[in-house]
Length: 261
Ligand SMILES: CC(C)(COP(=O)(O)OP(=O)(O)OC[C@H]1O[C@@H](n2cnc3c(N)ncnc32)[C@H](O)[C@@H]1OP(=O)(O)O)[C@@H](O)C(=O)NCCC(=O)NCCS
Image (cartoon, rainbow, N blue to C red; front, side, top):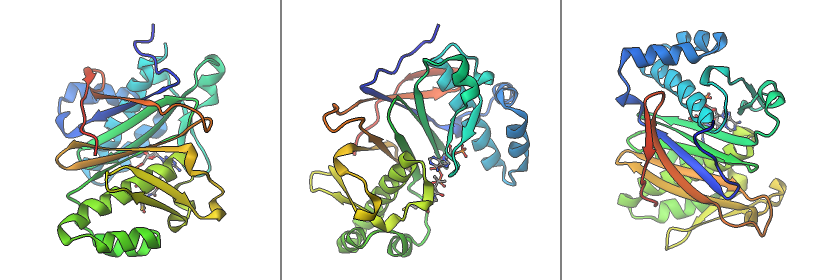
């Protein structure tokens, strides 16, 4: 029997602090959950931390999905859309036509997240805030003109935080659309209100409607920031309720109270 159900008005957000997982017995169980092509890809990572992150991500998505369905973690099969977004394979759905789960994954140094819902688009993004690239240069190149203007008008001490607000929100939207960077990043803009609530606007070329979208931002740890995007099935649909969990795949999971930004 499935241990959990995600109702149509809910989204479940799973966090896995992957650096905590060092038990070699557990890691070898994760290895045995993977399909051959995943094992091959796992072996190809040059850096051990990327190999570890990949392994834990595979275990995370498989064990999380198994909480919602009577399917063993190693039995899940996935396909990818033309932009690389993993989805549950028709091979699995053919056997379980009632399954209407949607998920999306994101990983950053130290944290992997997985959003799960039903019948609606979902996109998640996590970033490690200690990344020290040329943040303003990246913003100048990729953000919309209103976002750049707002970012550069912030006092210096607030710019890093504002950069990651925009970055994670933009990623969550393109991931919910499932189209990756084929969606031009300057053709949609986030508008962060003084009360920190968020509105999106679209260039007419994107043919999208802001009223269909909801966004959330969380701070799961000192070093991480998360954005979550969902598309409502209809304009009158209720705002979904977010339930957050923390998990060590195949070991333990529990509720996780994450501060909202
Ligand atoms: C591939 C992309 C969808 C996300 O990449 P990312 O931010 O580097 O990585 P994340 O950890 O957040 O997400 C990776 C996961 O997203 C999922 N994913 C891959 N392609 C996806 C797509 N088209 N749509 C939704 N999810 C996708 C996969 O599950 C992937 O993990 P996996 O390979 O372990 O299964 C895409 O947005 C990208 O290349 N971004 C690069 C960063 C960038 O320039 N961002 C600009 C923001 S302003």
